[in-house]
Length: 134
Image (tube, rainbow, N blue to C red):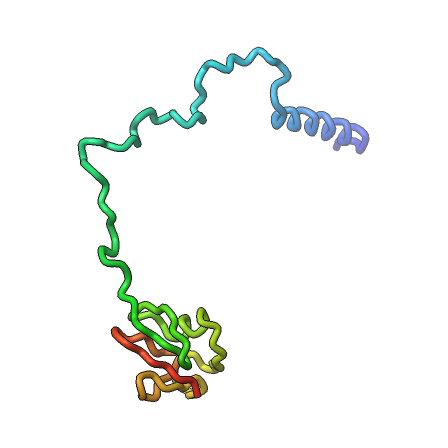
């Protein structure tokens, strides 16, 4: 069995040597002209653009999103067809009460193009859309 003072001495030596492993070296003889693997040109030109491919195309939506002409309580807003009505109403800062968020309770009912809809599950249709809260 090791005595308490001897154990304290051994632990302090271990702490000093393990702490030195996390410090920077004290010498200043590093040659800064030698590239290190952490420099940005590590991969050389591996990820350079290939000019032989021609001009870059705009991939994705060619004509942009399918924007629907939408009005909420007479206020025109921008909305994408197929977007959830709840998101559109929140973005337009229209107050609406939601309870179940599944379309069961009817708390969020409103008129969309003259038909009764539930805002928590409805989506913006293509074309014109007129929304009137109740």
